[in-house]
Length: 262
Image 1 (cartoon, rainbow, N blue to C red):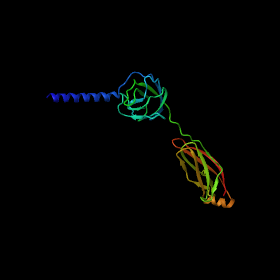
Image 2: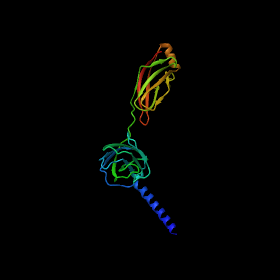
Image 3: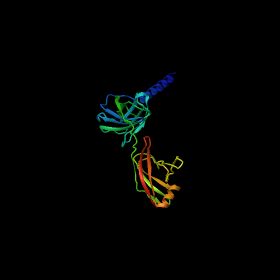
Image 4: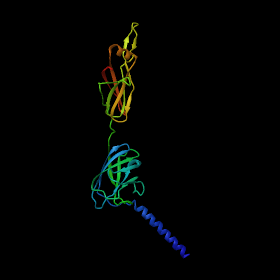
């Protein structure tokens, strides 16, 4: 019976030791003296933590977010470290910890969350993994609006003829991702029967797009009416309406006069 009681005591001590060791990784120490600012919107934020000193040393940061929003990732560009979601202090949902101390001064941290955040709670790590933490630092977020895609674009009026494609190349430079279309404005004329009719276009062009800023090349192919004009006069003179549809922005249109020759 004594042996049984001794074994039970040893098992209890082992469980208590494991519990203490587990909770030690989430222990909160005293204040660090750090300050913090953040800017961003949606689920992406740029956080600047001003590390106060190296005494005591700091090894990273745990982050908590307001309104029940979860921290999905934490990274310090140019510095190796580990993003963890275990062994966290109270109120944090993610931590980034390095194996060597951070240099005092501003540390830029990129934080991704599950939703919009008005304020972060930042707990500097006071030891390498398994980390202990200083008291939380309140980090208010300055919201920034998402930039509006630029609708700027420029049409090069100097077209070139591609004998293989039997079409003219029209170059359009766009300032952001989007789609470009070109078409002749619809013209109407009166007939002898006093009824208006829409003139058929001289050329046709298929719209093209890019996922980044750059140059789009539209191919202008003559219609049967355009071929007749080209055969009769050696050129096609027309006005073309070029429209740029930036991704996520408002469309813009410009008119360009062209003379198409082979």
